[in-house]
Image (tube, rainbow, N blue to C red):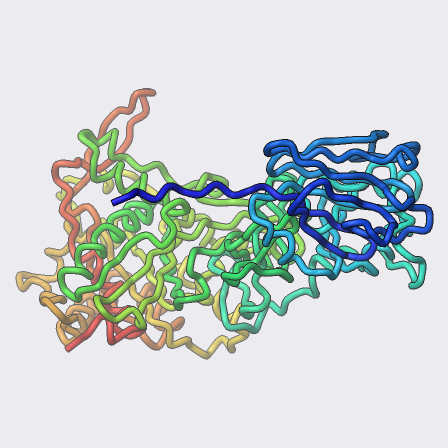
Length: 595
C-alpha cells in the first residue's frame, strides 16, 4: 500500500485595508496594489496613484515593492521604507499615499478571510503597559482623537488579525473620520471591564473569594505573551477579559486572537478550576485551633477518601486541578513516603505562607487560602459528578482578633456545604486530667485552650455573613471531630464504637449511636463545645477520628530544634473519612448511600 505523505500548505499573503476593513488573499503573483481599476487590490485614498506597489512571490518568500511615485513618504512598520519581504507567519504594516495596509504571510488563507470585513482594533497604552480591545472602527477613532501628541508617539493601534506589529497612533490618525464625540478614558476601560458584578447573587460561588456570579460574568484569561499585566492583579499576571470573539469550537479569543479557555472569577480574578461551570462544587470547611492538626488531617483525609469512596461506593476521588493541588499533594507524599519522623513532619500552616495568595477583594488586597479541588465521579453515572473544595487554613484565622476585612481568610465557613470542627482534646484541661499516665509527648506541651471561643467566633461570623438573627441556626451539616482518638477512646468504656461503613453504604444508625456516646463524653468534660456547636447548626454529629492512629514521637531536627512528629512506620488512620461520608450522604445520597 502506498503511504500518504502530508501535503505542505502553500503560503499566501493576506492584505487588509485598515480604513475600510476590506481583506484579500494573494493567490498568484505578480499582484498589483493601487487606485487603478485594473489593480488586483484597489485602494481608495485620493492621493494614491494607479499603482501603489506590487507583490511578487519567490519560492516561499513574498517581496512587496512600492512604485517610485508612492515611495517618498512611505512608512513600513513605522519607519521609512520602500520595500519589505514576508516569510511564513511574518507581519508588516504599510502607510503610503494616505493608505494604511496590513500584510501577513499565511499557511492557511481561511484564518484571514474568516475575520470578516468589519474592521476591529486593539489599542496599547504604553504608559499603563496595557492592551485594550477589541474595538470597532468608530470606538477606536474616538479614543485615538483624544491622544495628546506625546501619547501618540508611543501608543499603538493594532488592526485585527495581526499579533506582532501595528501602527503608531501619531501616524494613523487620518484613517479615522472625525464624525462622533470623543470618549473619556474611563469609557475605554469600561469597554474592557464591564459593570461590577453583584457579589450576593448568582449561579456560582467562587471557591477563592466566596462571592457569587452568573455564567456570563466569568472572565477569560489571556494567553498571548504580550497580554501580560492585569490592572487589578499586577504586571506579572495575564490580563482578564470578557470575551467578545470566539473560534469555531466556541472558545474565547484573547485580544491577539489566541484561544483562551481558562476562566477567572469576576470578583477576585483568580483562575477557576477546570470544568468549574460543568459540575457543582461543594466547600468543605475545616475549622480548628492553631496546632490542632488540620494539615495532618487534610493530608490523610484526601488519601483515605480516595480509597474508601472507591472500595465502598464505586466512586472515584481525584485531583480536579493537579497543578493547583500540588502543595497538598507534596504534604501527603511527605507524610506517607517518609522514613523518619523528621521527614514526615509537616510545618505549621502560616498566615502568610505558601498556602495563601494575595488577591483583590472588595477594593483591597487580602491574603486568601488556596483552594484544593477534588472531583468525585460515580462509575457510569457522570451526570452525578461534583467537586469538593478544601482549604488548609492557619488556625489563627479562626480566632476572634483575625476577623477583619483585611483578613477574611476563613469566611468560606459561611458558604460551606459542610463544616468540620477539629477538636483537639489534648489541648483541653479536663481531657488532660483524665489522661494522666498516658505517654504521649503532646500532653507535655502546654497551650491556652480557646477552642470553645473559636466555635463561638465561628457562630458570629456565619450569622453575620448570612444576615441571621443570633437565635437562628443553620441546617448545614456540622461535624464535631474529636481528634487523636487513639489517646482517649478508652474513656468511652469497654464497648468499642460501632462500625460506620460497610461495602456499599454508610450505616447511619451506627453513626448516630456513636455520635450520642461522644456527645455525652463532651457534655461531661467540656460542655461548652456541645453548646457552641449546636448553637450554630441544627444538624450536628460527633465523631472520633485519629489521622495518625498512633502517638507522635519527639525528635531533634537538623537545626537542633526539638519537634513532635509522626513515626511513619506506625501511621494507621482511624475513622478519618467518616465525617465526610456523613456529610456526603446528605449532599449526594445517590453517590454515598446510607442505610
